[in-house]
Image 1 (tube, rainbow, N blue to C red):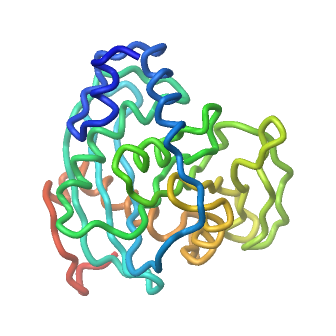
Image 2 (cartoon, helix red, strand yellow):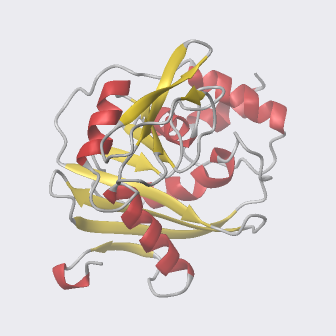
Length: 246
């Protein structure tokens, strides 16, 4: 790999905009060699949801993380950043559009969460390097993915009741789960990102599921970044007051 790409992998100041797709593929392959899917090594007191809001072909990115207490799942702080990208919209490479902005929001958090749950995939990805895995390897954070659509693999439809799930497999390997988070709604797709096992990702997803289809961390992140995009919230880091919860 060229030195410029190697530097891009190891530095937190990312600029992915000038990459070609073959170069981005090389980065994914290099990062995959550092993936850690061992079981969680410590207890969890906080879990963050990470999400972005942008139009399909827009260059403006609204990124945010919302930190929740665990297991209570109450928002306690959030970080919002407005950024831009010109990396093309290509399925399987969306991390290159989204991670630089999310990384800025993450660096803005004075205390890092124990786990970050992404509105996207972890190893449930053709090259096992969805946004949650990509971000986790770059930063060393414990991460997992919760995607609304399946990016790779095959699965059988889980039962209709909340909490039922099936394995997602690809080339004979289990890469995640199709999880029914609410009765009679479409499943979400759960996978570990970095520094947790498949079983850990499923356990956390189920414990973070409330009355909505999306688990609470990514549901809150989705709401906050959309409120940010329409001007209802301002850029920066903030602690959440009880009466401002939504």
